[in-house]
Length: 175
View 1 (tube, rainbow, N blue to C red):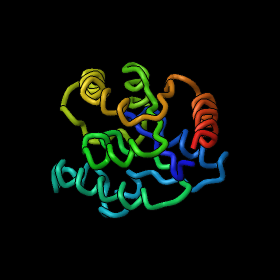
View 2: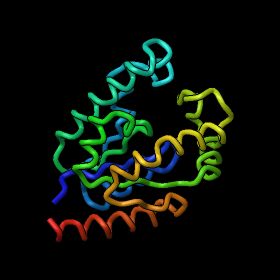
View 3: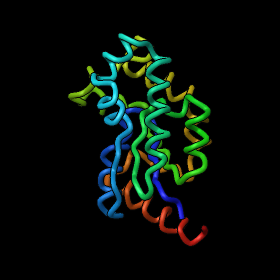
View 4: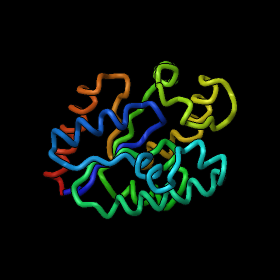
């Protein structure tokens, strides 16, 4: 039986909202890797990246994932770029990992409504729609390659959670 459930996908796909509900339904602990990273860094992600650069951020992100992967029985929402490092993909690929796949316009709409938008640094400096499209194109194979399940991120939090629960509970019989 998989010990942890990892949720991956681009920012604003619903990983944290789905993860909290999923953890509650399964009576598991919930961790958001970005929140853990912010606590470790002592500042918001945008500030950390501005001071230390993206490579240092990705180093810290990998360290956080390693630490969280030592948990037993948790739902872990991962930062959108976690799949960029091979060491992270190895952790995700050997676990029950769900890619919450969401279309560009849905993501753009959610990001424009997100009060924490300014805390999430632009990756490209382009418009929100162009950036999302570019990031998804670059990461699609990485997300899919790590995933035990690809869930439709256009559904409600409850629908996505239900899809994950069905697959997860089915995987327990396979192990």
